[in-house]
Length: 609
Image (cartoon, rainbow, N blue to C red; front, side):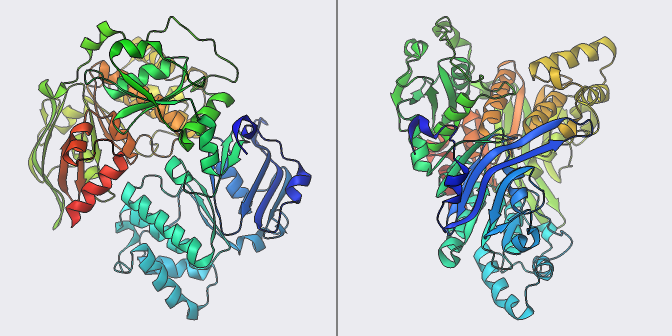
């Protein structure tokens, strides 16, 4: 399947039923409708056709609300379909949910580890739940623990493991019995590149050794590209499906990379390209900006006068994914609706006269954050070891590192949420040792996990946080209206936060963090678990904020997002390993066009030798 024929495929029930006996799972015209308390119906899956084959790895990709998790929960017998057929292992799932559950392993996004139990005790508990015979446990446990790299930590409490180790323990608990099908719902959200690589190595080994079949949903296109078959979903539909190499070719002839002069920040060029109606997508990558034109062989005229080197490149799975989503249209306004968009020849992007207004030497400006030989200890454990760096006004500064590296501890100290043990630390000119409350008045904070009030509406959350920061009356009302418009939340103003999609929750968190117009904005893994479309829109807002002079501190496990940073640090085991601009760090590593995942892994692995 290739070309336009892969978009919105129509597969008959008869064709689905005729599929050979390599199919473990077959969904035919699967339909699921949710009805809320008010009687309003939402179609989650609309006549879905999916096949999962033996010994293969199948991926589901798509934006928030596409229906990926709903399909997985239906397959696990945790919900009942509204219509259509769903067969697994030759059994009707709605009619035989228990028998189906006994043959599969399911690892949801929030896997239920017991944090006050040890690694071994968690595995024993899940073995008890699944009825694993006692005589088979020692061998199975040993193999899994060695494979996961947890064999030296069997007595450690699960609550004391790093994020990556918790994910691997969750996978081990899911595999205490040998399932015919392993179902993983975004297993690597919030996990660093090293741990992601290890987890995928484990999956590939299990497929080779045990002929394990895997169904995985993921927000990482590089992970989907490793699978045998990919289904692209949107709004409960299948937009395209095929081998990832075949899907990637669908964007052939539309993909380019632009190398701007040093006077133009990558994130600024990306933001302006995204605003151009001739462009479908743009993203910083490998030290350049990769973009997709709406028409094959498309031209962006305003790039030439900027002395920007533009050349065509091979298309990838992510390029095809963004192009297909563009064609499908996004109901929340992140991309245009289905249908052709007229070229707007009046759009000029960045003009040569504007280039001189971009600040590319921010480290010569005022210092907003000063970190001087900061130490943080928890008992005898040194979480941060004599770290020193400065962050300047209007800078986008990244804190990167593996799970357990000390970056979250550093982040919390910068926010005033944790006291330092030694050294000095000032934020917005305020010493955090003596005036943490005063410093907090100058900062905004967006947490990794949605931390607003779920029963409050969008408007009520903004009103509450505005009041907490001392805004009242007309000043607060006007500021709320500004933010509702800026983050496209006006139509959601009376919707409870718990009822919002992940993308809208992230917008609300950003709006709440900016309600008091802070001098410094702290973002703790703000794009974790959201799709590429929402990530693009998020970084456009960050670009605008930085241009207005807001200082941004961000932690992330999407290493490509380091490309948006003016500078970043990489920490591991409490130590600062590297500090600099993305291009400077590439030069230090003698890897001018390397992917940031490669750079990250090399730096950490070399430091650990």
